[in-house]
Image (tube, rainbow, N blue to C red; front, top):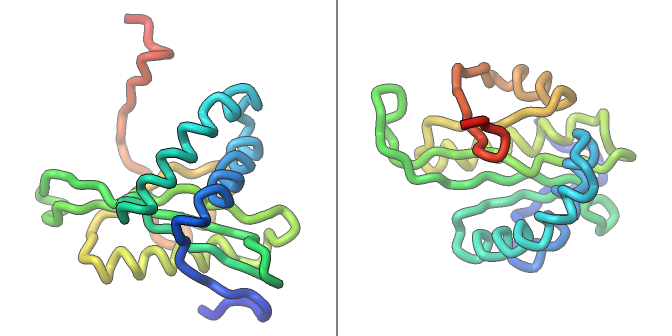
Length: 160
Protein backbone atom coordinates (compact mmCIF):
# COMPACT_ATOMS: atom_id res chain seq x y z
CA UNK A 1 0.00 0.00 0.00
CA UNK A 2 1.72 3.16 -1.15
CA UNK A 3 1.16 6.64 0.19
CA UNK A 4 -0.86 9.14 -1.84
CA UNK A 5 1.27 11.46 -3.97
CA UNK A 6 2.93 14.30 -2.12
CA UNK A 7 3.17 12.60 1.30
CA UNK A 8 6.36 11.43 2.98
CA UNK A 9 6.66 9.13 5.98
CA UNK A 10 9.47 9.50 8.49
CA UNK A 11 10.37 8.38 12.01
CA UNK A 12 9.72 10.91 14.74
CA UNK A 13 12.78 12.47 16.34
CA UNK A 14 13.30 13.94 19.80
CA UNK A 15 12.73 17.41 18.28
CA UNK A 16 9.22 16.32 17.22
CA UNK A 17 7.91 15.88 20.78
CA UNK A 18 6.02 19.20 20.76
CA UNK A 19 4.41 18.45 17.38
CA UNK A 20 3.32 15.03 18.62
CA UNK A 21 1.91 16.58 21.80
CA UNK A 22 0.00 19.16 19.74
CA UNK A 23 -1.55 16.32 17.73
CA UNK A 24 -2.32 14.40 20.92
CA UNK A 25 -4.09 17.41 22.41
CA UNK A 26 -6.11 17.82 19.18
CA UNK A 27 -6.97 14.10 19.25
CA UNK A 28 -8.42 14.50 22.75
CA UNK A 29 -10.43 17.54 21.62
CA UNK A 30 -11.83 15.49 18.73
CA UNK A 31 -12.98 12.67 21.03
CA UNK A 32 -14.71 15.08 23.40
CA UNK A 33 -12.33 15.59 26.31
CA UNK A 34 -12.80 18.79 28.26
CA UNK A 35 -10.26 21.50 27.32
CA UNK A 36 -9.40 22.00 30.99
CA UNK A 37 -8.53 18.30 31.33
CA UNK A 38 -6.34 18.43 28.22
CA UNK A 39 -4.55 21.55 29.40
CA UNK A 40 -3.99 20.03 32.84
CA UNK A 41 -2.04 17.05 31.47
CA UNK A 42 -0.41 18.51 28.35
CA UNK A 43 2.87 19.62 29.98
CA UNK A 44 3.41 16.34 31.83
CA UNK A 45 2.49 14.42 28.67
CA UNK A 46 5.06 16.43 26.68
CA UNK A 47 7.67 15.64 29.33
CA UNK A 48 6.82 11.93 29.04
CA UNK A 49 7.02 12.08 25.22
CA UNK A 50 10.40 13.81 25.30
CA UNK A 51 11.78 11.27 27.76
CA UNK A 52 10.46 8.20 25.97
CA UNK A 53 11.41 9.42 22.48
CA UNK A 54 14.95 9.94 23.79
CA UNK A 55 15.12 6.51 25.44
CA UNK A 56 13.48 4.62 22.57
CA UNK A 57 10.57 3.44 24.73
CA UNK A 58 8.29 5.35 22.33
CA UNK A 59 8.61 5.08 18.55
CA UNK A 60 6.68 7.50 16.41
CA UNK A 61 6.01 7.97 12.73
CA UNK A 62 5.01 11.22 11.08
CA UNK A 63 3.49 11.96 7.70
CA UNK A 64 4.40 15.22 6.03
CA UNK A 65 3.01 17.07 3.07
CA UNK A 66 4.69 20.18 1.78
CA UNK A 67 7.06 20.17 4.74
CA UNK A 68 4.21 20.22 7.27
CA UNK A 69 3.36 17.39 9.65
CA UNK A 70 -0.20 16.32 8.82
CA UNK A 71 -0.50 12.99 10.62
CA UNK A 72 1.25 10.87 13.17
CA UNK A 73 1.08 7.72 15.25
CA UNK A 74 3.26 6.00 17.77
CA UNK A 75 3.92 2.84 19.69
CA UNK A 76 4.99 2.31 23.28
CA UNK A 77 7.23 -0.71 23.79
CA UNK A 78 6.05 -2.41 26.96
CA UNK A 79 7.89 -5.04 28.99
CA UNK A 80 5.44 -7.82 29.84
CA UNK A 81 5.70 -11.24 31.37
CA UNK A 82 5.31 -13.85 28.59
CA UNK A 83 2.02 -15.72 28.46
CA UNK A 84 0.59 -18.66 26.51
CA UNK A 85 -0.89 -16.26 23.92
CA UNK A 86 2.20 -14.04 23.77
CA UNK A 87 5.55 -15.72 24.39
CA UNK A 88 7.42 -12.48 23.68
CA UNK A 89 8.34 -10.28 26.64
CA UNK A 90 7.74 -7.12 24.62
CA UNK A 91 4.30 -5.92 23.67
CA UNK A 92 3.26 -2.87 21.70
CA UNK A 93 0.66 -0.28 22.60
CA UNK A 94 -0.33 1.96 19.68
CA UNK A 95 -1.33 5.51 20.47
CA UNK A 96 -1.35 9.12 19.34
CA UNK A 97 -2.93 8.28 15.99
CA UNK A 98 -3.99 11.60 14.50
CA UNK A 99 -4.66 13.08 11.06
CA UNK A 100 -5.34 16.79 10.64
CA UNK A 101 -8.96 17.34 9.54
CA UNK A 102 -8.06 18.68 6.08
CA UNK A 103 -6.21 15.44 5.25
CA UNK A 104 -8.72 12.90 6.54
CA UNK A 105 -10.44 10.37 4.31
CA UNK A 106 -7.30 9.42 2.36
CA UNK A 107 -6.35 6.35 4.37
CA UNK A 108 -3.41 8.08 6.07
CA UNK A 109 -4.14 6.55 9.49
CA UNK A 110 -4.17 3.11 7.88
CA UNK A 111 -0.77 3.78 6.30
CA UNK A 112 0.65 4.84 9.66
CA UNK A 113 -0.75 1.81 11.48
CA UNK A 114 0.52 -0.61 8.82
CA UNK A 115 4.00 0.93 9.04
CA UNK A 116 3.94 0.62 12.84
CA UNK A 117 2.76 -2.99 12.61
CA UNK A 118 5.69 -3.72 10.28
CA UNK A 119 8.02 -2.22 12.90
CA UNK A 120 6.40 -4.42 15.55
CA UNK A 121 6.95 -7.53 13.45
CA UNK A 122 10.56 -6.53 12.76
CA UNK A 123 11.14 -6.29 16.54
CA UNK A 124 9.56 -9.69 17.23
CA UNK A 125 6.49 -8.26 18.95
CA UNK A 126 3.54 -10.64 18.76
CA UNK A 127 0.84 -8.73 20.65
CA UNK A 128 -0.31 -5.21 19.77
CA UNK A 129 -3.09 -3.37 21.57
CA UNK A 130 -4.73 0.04 21.49
CA UNK A 131 -7.79 1.99 22.49
CA UNK A 132 -9.88 3.25 19.59
CA UNK A 133 -12.23 6.16 19.17
CA UNK A 134 -15.53 5.45 17.43
CA UNK A 135 -14.15 7.19 14.32
CA UNK A 136 -10.97 5.10 14.33
CA UNK A 137 -12.49 1.72 15.10
CA UNK A 138 -13.23 0.77 11.43
CA UNK A 139 -9.59 1.37 10.47
CA UNK A 140 -8.34 -0.95 13.20
CA UNK A 141 -10.98 -3.60 12.55
CA UNK A 142 -10.04 -3.64 8.86
CA UNK A 143 -6.42 -4.30 9.91
CA UNK A 144 -7.42 -7.30 12.04
CA UNK A 145 -7.72 -5.83 15.55
CA UNK A 146 -10.34 -7.56 17.72
CA UNK A 147 -12.12 -6.40 20.89
CA UNK A 148 -10.84 -8.00 24.09
CA UNK A 149 -12.42 -8.68 27.48
CA UNK A 150 -10.09 -6.28 29.33
CA UNK A 151 -11.45 -4.76 32.52
CA UNK A 152 -10.26 -1.52 34.04
CA UNK A 153 -10.54 0.29 37.34
CA UNK A 154 -9.90 4.02 37.40
CA UNK A 155 -9.52 5.07 41.03
CA UNK A 156 -10.70 8.62 40.29
CA UNK A 157 -14.08 7.18 39.23
CA UNK A 158 -14.35 4.26 41.66
CA UNK A 159 -16.56 4.33 44.74
CA UNK A 160 -14.53 2.08 46.99
